Amino acid sequence: MRICALLLLLLPALASGTEKIVVEAEGMAAIENNDVARAREEARRRLYRDALEKGIGARVQGITEMKDFEVVRDTVFSRSEGLVTATENLKEERTNDGILRLAAQCTVSASTLDGVLGPAVIDALGNPRIMVLIDEVVDGERQFLSTAEGEVLKAFQKAGYMLVDPGQAGAIRKGELEGAKISGDTAALQELARSFQSDVLIHGKAQASTATKQNVSGVVLYALNSQLQLKAIITQTAHVIGAEGSELRVQGTSPSDGAMKAFQKLSPRMAGSLLHTVAYALVSGSSGSIPGRSFKVTVSDLTFAEARSLRDSLGEVSGVNGVYQRAYANRTLELDVSAETSSEEIAIALESLGVEITGITAGTVNGRKGR
Image 1 (cartoon, one colour):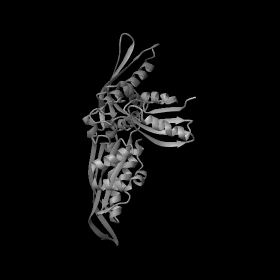
Image 2 (cartoon, rainbow, N blue to C red):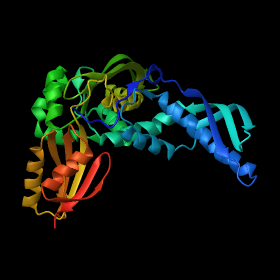
Image 3 (cartoon, rainbow, N blue to C red):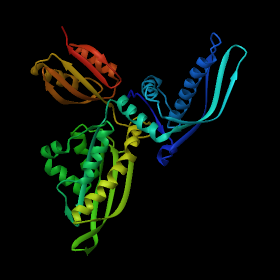
Image 4 (cartoon, rainbow, N blue to C red):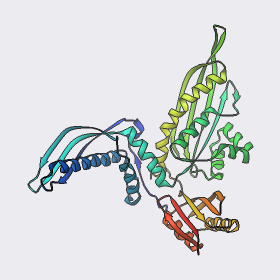
């Protein structure tokens, strides 16, 4: 059974892009030494914390394992400034036993909350790897470099996702990669993404065609109709977790210039819609899920032969789906491990292979060669 940090179900509010979450919240504090001002400040902090916690709950539900959700929630609380944007109908009362109680209707910024909650979920997942493959055609000519692909990669990288390097992928399996992008064959794309240990594949089509052209003061301007379709799937299961489509008409000094301008506008907006959908879907019981999650493993003080042996041995451990070597430098081995288990179980497996564990989080395991 996959041991998952979080099991979350998306609420309709997330998909609708609602910008505000309004909740009823309260906070209480004891009045000590007749210091009402201090109690009021403490109660206000707890009021905001309660509002924020309910705001998080309005974004996710069906939490079945609290252990790692606490990690996510605390990460959000640590960056709570600016998330609660308004309080209304504030009421204050004092109880007979010396407790000051505040109650109010609070507004939580949904978009700002997503900006914090999304990366927190990504971190708890162990930084899942994303592969982006977009076939781009302008006036019937396939583009050597895809503007849309580059913009989507940039958006996911900025959000904190680990990415498959498209240049490296193309160099290793150039013919297959280009063929799969052109055909749009989901099975072929899925197999390619799996071969690069990608957890999620985002693929699609970017097409632009000249509608009209006109001469303005000696300059020929081209008006292009541009369309972009994106789809995100779980690599192991081909389960669709998100899809976006949009079109735009833009002018440029050439067909390529107009298409580039259009895709530079369309791609970030559409990628932004997919960013948190992908993060939440990866841990959703209804998403099809990935068979396991990715962990970053770092082990120091190893010779190259020892590093290779450790990598191969870890790949044979029960529950481990794959091991990808990110780097070996200065006698330090960096691995990405996809496994249907927890970081604690990875640590135990490493100890059995002679590694001394020096640190562990929900998504990382650090160690060094045993003494």
